[in-house]
Amino acid sequence: MLNQKDILATIEMIDNQHLDIRTITMGISLLDCCDPDMNHACDKIYDKITRRAENLVRTGEEIEREFGIPIVNKRISVTPIALIAAASCHADAGNDPAARAENNALPFALALDRAADTTGVNFIGGFSALVHKGMTDADKILLNSIPEALSRTKRVCASVNIGSTRAGINMDAVAMMGDIIQKTAEYTRDQDGLGCAKLVVFCNAVEDNPFMAGAFHGIGEAESVINVGVSGPGVVYQAIQGVKDAPFDILAETIKKTAFRVTRMGQLVAREASRRLNIPFGIVDLSLAPTPAIGDSVARILEAMGLETCGTHGTTAALALLNDAVKKGGVMASSSVGGLSGAFIPVSEDEGMIAAARAGTLNLDKLEAMTCVCSVGLDMIAVPGDTPSETIAAIIADEAAIGMVNQKTTAVRIIPAPGKKIGDTVEMGGLLGSAPVMPVHPESAAAFIRRGGRVPAPLHSLKN
Image (cartoon, rainbow, N blue to C red; front, side, top):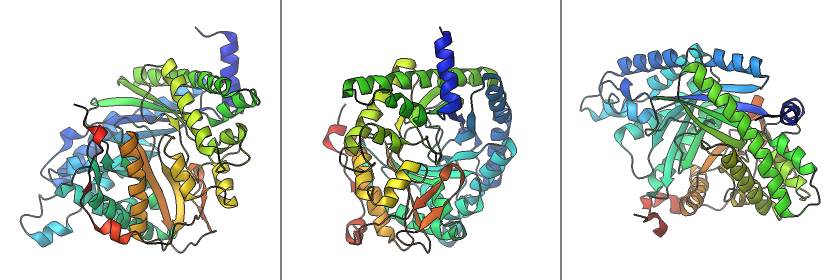
């Protein structure tokens, strides 16, 4: 039961420490929208999303006003579109190989964008494919449609799962994604490659992630669910300030108790949204998702632990402690903690990470090491526009290997900024922030990527 001290502490977190509900995300199954006619399928998709989510934004705004809790985004995630497109992606192509090659999944992306616009949500995720063991024809069509789809839509986000601990890594898909990311950057050249900020490549993708750009509604999920993502780097930072010289066990306990309070608030909002929308409550994702605002940085949390600058020796250990304590606090607070839950390290969205990258303390190699213990992976990183697609693919392969071997979710969201070189800045605005263009290793991995095939799953995948 809440007491006066708890209430005042929560008010302080909201008013002065950047605590917010980062997103209410409604997951919607589109499996019943499959249709041999692509136009009919797109109409069904638009109709179902706008019907199911017609009150989502209004409900979020009402809860925000009544509870006094900021709810930054209202979003939708849907069934991976490659699964829906499989019923119709060849419907108009017949057996003509040339006609089949011209077929693409762009109409589905346009339908999603229209539905997002009608419902008023910030983003809609699920222009996605799950290709960790192999690719269907529909998967290939969707992947090849991504550059144009992300350049012609405003709110659509795409994700591709190219590996898992059980299946290994689909290196053919990895090579394709290197090319696709380069093409997406080129298609959105006038926006410094902004389309790539809406594209995530996963290993071990989860089915209940409420955060963009990687959210999709998994096939094991209900018809519709409400998932909530909570964020509070500023709250954790302030808590650590109170135990500056304490030993690590006290530091971890302080973070855990703070995460507990944040998660309880998220669950309160999630259950209220679920009740008002008459849609089942799914999970609370307690992720320390930073913003470019001062005081809302994961990097500054690590520095508050005693590091002079994020990226120096000790950073990975500090991040491991933070991530573990956040998860433990969340699990104490709710039996429905899910999604990615932990600490995010997106460079462009964290003012402390931006400062460390500009100073040269934080580089790609150190970020890769940090992803072994954080919640996701290499996130919102800008690299020179002329970076070879094989190098991008090799970066994806490295991250996928970390996820596969360590049985965790890893991801890459990388922006080869057209016309930009090392030291330049990519400005994306809003929550996406700005990213200093970081160097990549100039030595080629092309021969490695060209091998193709599949990296076998590790031995510990054989658990049955």
